[in-house]
Length: 152
Image (cartoon, rainbow, N blue to C red; front, side, top):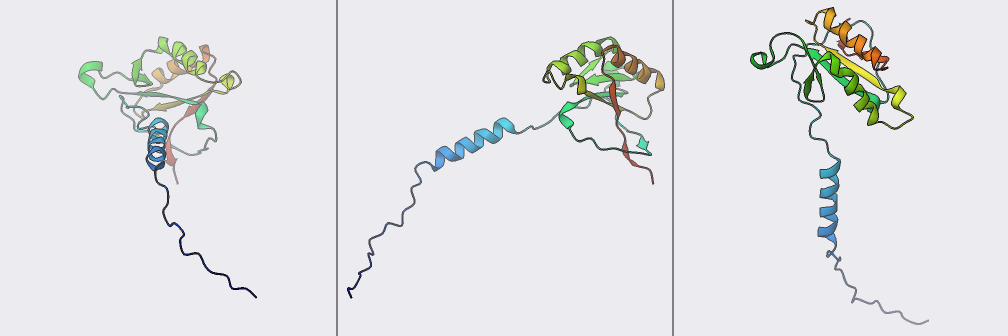
């Protein structure tokens, strides 16, 4: 039987020349995909409590309307205002806003859009029914009324 000799001249170096490229690619990936904020709320939001809650599965089909007294009352007054996408709008602008939100979705998902109405608990029913009427005119029939946790 022959004797085998062990080679002790193996290299223990790990090539690190591509490491900075990989790190910068990861950095750019996370910079592009990370959402830092969604919206600045310009109206007061004290949501009412609900007796029944249901969680939605597909949140990409939800567009949000905020209804409440403006936080900056010196500029916007004390009457309830509607906020959509960081902008205060009037009820007559809701149809245009709904059409813009539908255009962001694919053709198959446009009829599945859900409008989440986050109304302050101090808002009277008049402005809420005005918003409901305009949503009906814009053919946005799925309305979600946002609330806080269930009452025990």
